[in-house]
Image (tube, rainbow, N blue to C red; front, side, top):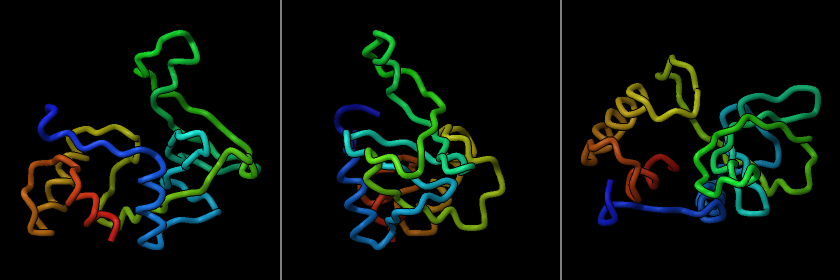
Length: 136
């Protein structure tokens, strides 16, 4: 991926795209995205005892490393006032693997299969058109 084909999104544009498609909620579900009011995003990995558990990237700045190269597991109260809402992802029933927040071979294969089924260029890159189809 280079500058010519990079497609970036901020947390709020992601949230609004999901909202526009009726795919947001105030209630967390495993696998959904959690959007924070301070322009941060995570993925809900579990919900227990009134807390959500997440995987989040770009968290290393807390330790003096501004490269954002760390992914951390964190937890928050479900009622945390810093949570804007949740983006609900329909993973479907065809994926049988673990949801682990890693873009590995299985994820690439699943994206290419989805793109092919949608009549898109099956390049494995989640660009603007693939995002649009994923959110429908």
